[in-house]
Image (cartoon, rainbow, N blue to C red):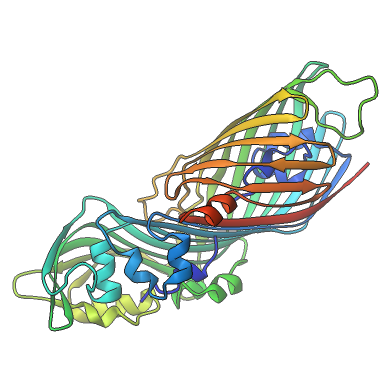
Length: 447
């Protein structure tokens, strides 16, 4: 079934390190205005990688000690939420002038999201109701849209940042990144306002008295299966078919430099920023493209055998089974379709507490509705990060509150242009945390 293998897919964005005092191309991912705080004349970003899985059901111990994770995922009554994503930053570079800094970047994205799926419904489709029914029946009634969504795409970005104010004590930057979008592959299953009765008799799970609005959309290799890692890897970069943008503003209350200041230091007492990220959309138009809205209706003595879905791997198979059942009626659809980027508001502040010790607070708030089918999901996150800046070496300890996985803490390091870390490594090792992530990268500063 489509949920099988979810934990094989990977996992967010450089938590903590994004507000490093060693500024370059990477920092523009958080706020394009930060690029004009660049530490060196030239910054060359060689590689960056981060991966994260967060959910509200499975703990690290569950993943290590259990083989049948679908049974655990669909236990209880709380809706299932899971987010898995991979981001790879490729070659990028930037150059700083007196009042301007210009940069280019390249990024690949792979996302998989389960959004507010009723565990009884998920269990019925995946496990034939083993967890929820136990030989009885359950009535499911939801007034929201349940989604399973997978997306891959690539970006080429060009950033310009410049100073509106550049004084000894105060600096005010603005910046914008324009993005060319290369949609790779897409799959979405949405079931809005689902009502129905699930019963299990003699090992067969049946769906009766059902009504729902259903969206089934797919494009590229994720039409075949959107839970297999190879399908994300093979379809990450498609043809140019979309544009996007990040815009931001940044203020620094600058620190008084010492008599012999060290070269390439970004010195401040207070650093504030605000950015709108991932404005824009992209159009999917592969040969196998399809986005169709249906009405699912099972009434009277009619019933749908849910055991048919246990070994299904793709949305096209689900669509075919439902159409062959006669209970799915097409309302409208389109071959090519547009998908909105996961637009977010980023707001942060970083304050110098004592020499070499800083504390930052970072808020990421999504601006779009994750229940909308043609929308890539984003998570609301709040992060507090104490960090020690020793010049060549930095240490970060992020404390994160994530709307899906709850509280996590981790550890990160930077040595020159190399960095490595995790926002959940400590909690993942010490508790049964519901998030695991890792990132690393390497960049070079010149002059």
